[in-house]
Length: 159
Picture 1 (cartoon, rainbow, N blue to C red):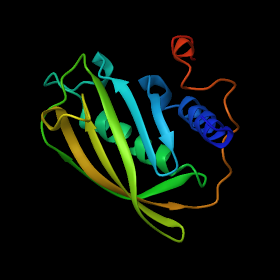
Picture 2 (cartoon, rainbow, N blue to C red):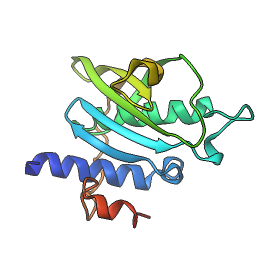
Picture 3 (cartoon, rainbow, N blue to C red):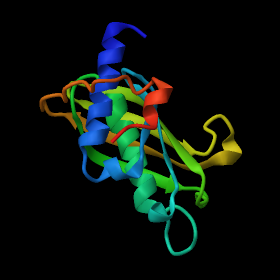
């Protein structure tokens, strides 16, 4: 990983840990480069609805964080519009992955495609798909975290 990519990953890691809402969801960053990210979270009892599957708000939150991570290469990007189609329930006890890919950018506005599932390479394991639009607003970036989110041994000790 080159220096700029490492700094970007450390900034996004700081963002994920500093956000009081998302920090309790144990969201992990798996892949990051400008315009693309993969993040995941466990579907724990606290993220489930009364029907035994992932709460739609938890799924949407993961999609939003995948989008925000993919767009963070130019600083914080704020969601201006989102559309998420839920294809099937996300089972509890699983790990949900979200991949965001930038499809368009014009000035400070960008559009991203987001796919969520247990296995992003298996269409039968896709639970939701959507599109997020946002605007880079020139907010300051987070300071890089002290460690790389891609160092596996450090995932267990994060706070």
